[in-house]
Image 1 (cartoon, rainbow, N blue to C red):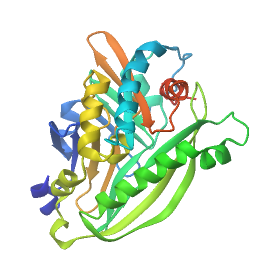
Image 2: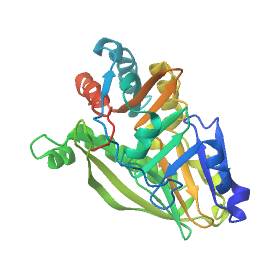
Image 3: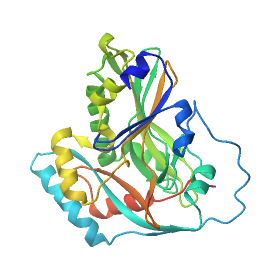
Length: 314
């Protein structure tokens, strides 16, 4: 990645959650490898006809009792001071009358990728952007059902959601400082509206920026190596929280909550791979979750995990 970005060669990359698997594709290799990409600044997708059928999506979440096992493990570690924010995610069996290709083509999101016969995601969350040697990140933490009365204000003022958001902003500000100077928070607690077929949501995000240090200019791979795993889907402090996640979750995240990005020869746009459907044999699974703090309530976190199981086709 460093070599290609140094040579100003455009490429697309995918990195899994544990930063064990890194796949890099130059522009002419993307379609050959069964990848369809639809980012704001890059797309290899042709216009599609209307879907022409009603969407069916059923989910089969684990029981509250099953969810509680990992939740309790996370809470115990938070009480012991090993973590103050842990992102706890689950894997839910789903059934739908849509193919992965149909989900990709007809869902609406800031970032969409289809990896043929493997996974599809439709993510609202930017990881980092690099524009003219300025690096920006946009942590998204905190969601609420938009049908709640005064939902945006309730979300902004919720003590637990605020604590979670403050923690992630602070974590990513520190992370960015490893590769950039003059790091600052430009926007704080901005509320985004996410429209879905199942349920409309509000999500809270912030914007942080800095100027790339000279030793990281033109080195996309070195930047990713420093910043990953992404703080917004891990927690803090990073090393111990990663241990807690691996103990609590009991499944492999794989590419879910990893990052992928498009380097156009000069600038970079990348996203966190959330809102993620994966195919295992003939079965589809939706992976979702949320941040746990000492203020988290079991029933609320269980509901948030279920709320995020949706397809943004409307």
